[in-house]
Image (cartoon, helix red, strand yellow):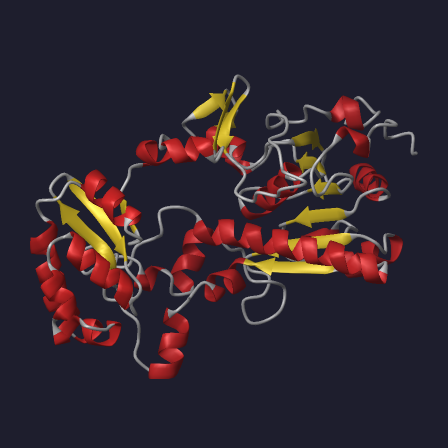
Length: 392
């Protein structure tokens, strides 16, 4: 062990539980996709050390609201379960500390502009792969390092725009609209998470790590289901459809007496049950609406009929009755309504502790369940615990 590091730079694997207990992750990333990937690894038992510059991860400042001065709720949503150190990766001394931490690390996650890690002597192919052959190196970027856009910076909403996501989100009144959550960032986090797990699994066979290359661009394009393939096959450009589905006529939002609800009807049996329950069995018997193909051909006429049929129903009562009958439906809830649902609590998807509030773990494992670890670290909170030199 180098003089720079304490004997406990990495935690004893016996202190952790979960599917990834014993996996050691060095998280050099910031903002959303990288930290989200590292947080999911931590939720399932990995020991994650988050490395920040003296300025800290940008999400620390993206408030209000703030959990405490200097730490926005946004940062808390992406960095629980980690220990944090503050380093200047442009300095040789601190680069050496990274090399020392990598001696026992399994995974490194970074999302700097392509070429930055190479400039610091931390590039995978140019430096780390030979020195640390078992290392899984996860690189997250906007566009990757090759191709006409290689090396350029990428941000969620910009990629939503460039990759066609906005062009199908919204309606004629709103125009193309950003999805309300950073969906490309989050999905890229899941892409990186999956890639890291596959690389760790492959390492069991080969004994070697590898680079995981996850980009916002690739992820955003991969999300164009079914619209992307619809266009490839038909040649017809997808357009704004509001809440409606491009391939299913009865997959849409509807007004009811006390708000809005969403119908998720995808087959003829569900449509028949739905029509009977709202006392409009005649609709499913009408040749214009018998199958999804005919319903798509006559979707505007069907929508007018359903709008009239549903206007006197209460959303809660109707959705409960439909779901009980095997017809997918749900009320259009606000964020508070969504998080206060009894089922959200039953599924442990709302975490409320004296030291931490956040969203739960969506991946449920029967034998090695994940757990919510320590609160997110303050900037450089664990320097003395991990690094011996007090001036770092």
